[in-house]
Amino acid sequence: MKNVINSRDIVKDLEDKGLVVDDSKQFNFYIKNFNYNTVILNYSDVFYLDENKKKYDPEANSSHLIALYKFDHDLGNHILRYILVIEKMLNTNVAYEIINEFHITDRCLFKINEKFIIQNILPNFNSVETHLSPKLFIHSWIKYCSTNKITKKYYNPNGRDEMARWENCPLDIMCLTWSFSTTFSIFLALTDRVRNRIINNFRLYPSQLKGFSDFLKNVLNIRNLISHNYPIYNCEVKYQSPELSEIYNSIFNISIDHISVMNMVELIEYFAFNKTLVSNTKYYFKKMQVPEKFKARIEQKLNK
Image 1 (cartoon, rainbow, N blue to C red):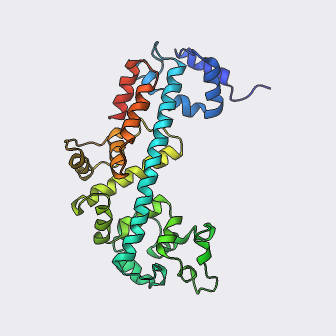
Image 2 (cartoon, rainbow, N blue to C red):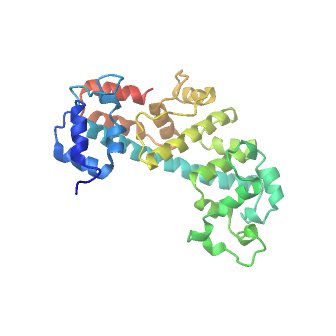
């Protein structure tokens, strides 16, 4: 019985569109194991003859497609490594600054009255994009505490409600269970004073709070794209703002009004206190074995 998804049929269709399959064994391996939609559809853009996208450029071959896929995969993995640094720094700073600002001497936030938390610690809750009420939002902070070996020992089954059952869990330990999305949402909901103290640890000023929030939105989006195997080299930097551009301009002493993927790489490097992400990106780009005409198109996407 013939397979419904057959790599030979896929290869024939691509050849009919003008793609030269110069290494059929390698190409079939990638189609079979990394999904046609990932390897071909996501990375064909720069290899088409024109904007109609019906025919491949006569100089394009299957090895060029694989080379771009590998470059983008390496790029994504390397970016993710430093996004995780930023995530951990934000997570830690959010917990520490809440504890310090409100003098929570035992570090156990959930011993504090829920109404006080909503009104005084999270006054900017309305800026958070969530379907949850403030009360359920706070409860979401403990969603994974029971499955984490570090936090679950603080559980008290005799507590009168869910918050009371976790009231002995210090916030700086509870935060270890938060996702990046949860951490970012808490950051957005905090007082301006606390958020300004947090961004100071990222070498920014209070006037740059809005721009840093937009940066984090983009980081979260890029993180999700990488985690779900979407291409990065040509992705859209969705959250553009004059405030984000101002941060870039002030750091790099340049004047731009639009943030590209490569600009985001530079900002991620800066806020992760790292000096290798940009140079490694350039290294991966240089070693990518595709003709210069296609490299120029790829570079254009990176800087768009």
